[in-house]
Length: 546
Ligand code: HEM
Image 1 (cartoon, rainbow, N blue to C red):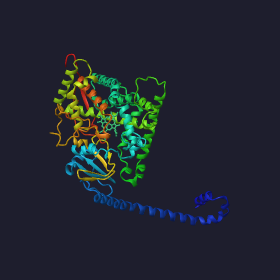
Image 2: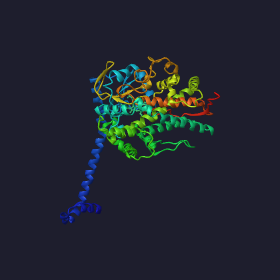
Image 3: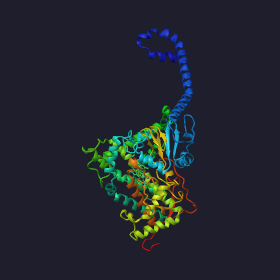
Image 4: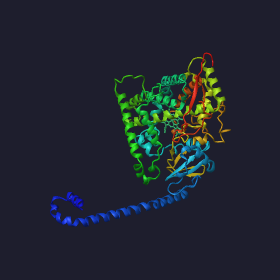
């Protein structure tokens, strides 16, 4: 009671304090009224809370009723009210799971993820429809919480919706960062890093330790991309293999946050749960820390007296374009940071995962490993290392990479797209704003296109014109069309250079006690081999040929 009087005391203006005595006697009524109103608020809160599911149920029913009556949607597994098919999805191996479901429901399959109408495309024919014939309808990206935050509100290339801004930004990237000339200008960076990796593996072998190829490849591609993007090498090989830098740790957290599940993306009224479970504060924290790093990098590049400046890197190029008054759009620092993020995320994990899958499949198919080793060793002789200028001679190695990307596409569901308008696909009506996943994993296993689709047979590409450049829809690891991967040349040459040197320089075997290598995958946009690939290597003596 005393507390209540004191609180009232503080709240009252001085004039009213004359009525203090009377108020003190009234305060018990005031407290009673306060308790009553709290009780009413709580009861109404609980009524609202219990009415929410009913509200959502009715909304869901109404929406599905509308969707079904207004659109003839492709078939799909029946879902539950509100959550739709979310509970049925095995996210540990989503692409494989969706491929299996598509065998029941067909190459165009409808799902409902919460309130989001979703389409899964699982055959080469239908992928061609979506990525080529109707590319203009399906060339935008959905706006999702993690991506939006990390891309400075979609001021990047990869997650920016289809717009004049995206077209200009992509043009800038293609001309200034990803052109063949530009990719070639970073040749020495890739070679130096691959040769440093080979030396590090030799040191490891000399002390009779097994080689963790998953880790080694991540170090390699992080080094290459960091040097190409902003002229710095985040890892150095030492006795303990590496030393982690702050930026790389932040990138790992960023990757996790990008694939995190945010309620607000699928249940528009339940965004508050993201704050409650800590997802949003975690996102804000990582964004702030990443932003500080990007800003530091930009500030360093703006310093004209920057020490150790070797060659123009991507930040230099983007800053130059920013200053260039003739450039197409007014680049801001946020645009540069968004593109940097795309390059770091798009370029590191993808090529690393590709080489690990190639080595995994070669280890499981020793006759193919032998064949590719023979090809590389015959072509290179005792030169000691494979350089980029040698790669054109290595047709079987290129076939190994294609076959790897067919069976284990690094981004098995590509990068999600969204329909910009209503359209008809194979007789089905696809509503506007449908979330679209093109399942490259399923397409690579499409029995209409591939004989013995489950077998690893690089020979199928020898003498075949089928390539991953986006024109052959049975092989689309880099996507296709307007949103196809602009970093394909850089990614492919990195994989070829790393793999060729690995098979040229070493003979590989399984560590003692390991009978078989599994092919379990990690969840996420980029699919890694779940269990690290650990092998024992023997240095190959090129002079003696053994
Ligand atoms: C093995 C290597 C790589 C693979 C398998 C790969 C795969 C992909 C895929 C599947 C997409 C989506 C395509 C679509 O929606 O049709 C994509 C987009 C993209 N990739 Fe790559 N990528 C690789 C390397 C790289 C590299 C090295 C970079 C940059 C340094 C890069 C930057 C990008 C960007 C910026 C986009 C977004 C394009 C847009 O939305 O307009 N990628 N990549």
